[in-house]
Amino acid sequence: MEYRVVIPAAGQGKRMKAGKNKQFILLEDQPVIVHTLNVFQNDPNCIGIILVINEKEKKEFCELVDANKLSKVSHILNGGKERQDSVYKGLKALPGEEDGVVLIHDGARPFVTCDMITRVAKKAAAKGAAVLAVPLKDTIKSGNDGIVLKTLNRSSLWAVQTPQAFRSSIIIKAYEHAERCGITATDDASLVEELGYEVSIVLGEEYNIKLTTPYDLSMAEVILKWKENKG
Ligand SMILES: Nc1ccn([C@@H]2O[C@H](COP(=O)(O)OP(=O)(O)OP(=O)(O)O)[C@@H](O)[C@H]2O)c(=O)n1
Ligand SMILES: C[C@](O)(CO)[C@H](O)COP(=O)(O)O
Image (cartoon, rainbow, N blue to C red):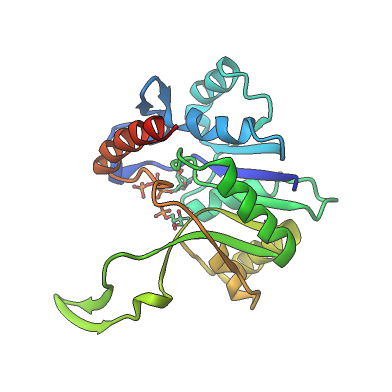
């Protein structure tokens, strides 16, 4: 199942408080983004990586791409204010004539594996749209001003990850519709749902975390050691 992947890596990383793009933070001996890009570079089913970056970080990103021989990577400059803007810029770089499978994966999720990628890509090829997700372990309640409003039924709630995978015609249509109607969302599948398409859930992995806060960096070190021991 061949696919292309759009990888947004143009965020400010405000919650990480690292004073730099969190994609450049070292995990063991490699920057976060190199861990992420290597997985797709080494996946024979990946036929292209569209990396969305900011102009001011172009030199640093391109040096990493060259030094690590990431031959499948092409970069798109100046994502946008929100993740959605950056992803849309990346999607516009897809070859127009294809209706192939496109994945969208956060640059800040370095622990994705070929197995997860293959499963979500295959589901999207068959069904049109799919997301990786893991079941919740905590009870979830809604609340305002410190007061519980409602306890939600945990059995129908999922923690959604990336890659999110789509037939390219569907995700392009969804992003065009969102731009026309001023719809914003924190993930890509939401925009597809807005058009009434069914989105399939594919089981992800707990360790496929997004590096968002300093605590996640500590968890990342634990995950690296756990994966090394697991073999
Ligand atoms: N305008 C943006 C915002 C986010 N991203 C990317 O989208 C992924 C997920 O976003 P998030 O974890 O929220 O990153 P930031 O927006 O950088 O984090 P923060 O909200 O803490 O600033 C990250 O790889 C980030 O680099 C992006 O390319 N362009
Ligand atoms: C796309 C995502 O990773 C799915 O869980 C998440 O919505 C990104 O949120 P962020 O606030 O842009 O990191």
